[in-house]
Amino acid sequence: QVQLVESGGDLVQAGGSLRLSCAASRTIFSIYVLGWYRQAPEKQRELVASMTSDGRTNYADSVKGRFTISRDNAKNTVYLQMNSLKPEDTAVYYCKATMGPFNYWGQGTQVTVSS
Image 1 (cartoon, helix red, strand yellow):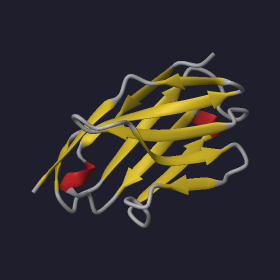
Image 2 (tube, rainbow, N blue to C red; image 1 turned 90 degrees about the horizontal axis):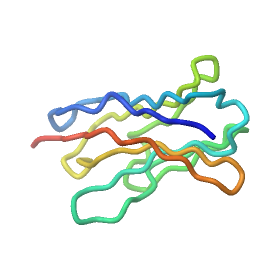
Image 3 (cartoon, rainbow, N blue to C red; image 1 turned 180 degrees about the vertical axis):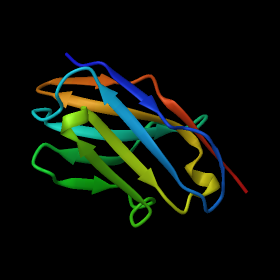
Image 4 (cartoon, one colour; image 1 turned 135 degrees about the horizontal axis):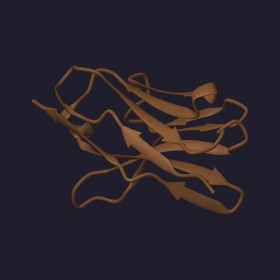
């Protein structure tokens, strides 16, 4: 079991940058998949980026080239660096850890991008 706490969400202007952090309550070294999802009002939650324990990454087409997922195992933290933000990126962002057959979710952090 792992508890996840997101932080770093804010109100930013289009073209700006943010770095989201997800702090885990235990080591993330052995967690199979760590990921970031987002959910805008009236829309389904969607995958933004993910990283496996062996370092393989996956990104949604809408964020490729702008967002980067990374992890710091020593700090038990996964990050999402978001550059060139667009109003369409406005959403609540959630981190997720997959451990075997179980998924664990954080509480979410709000990102708002103004025009």
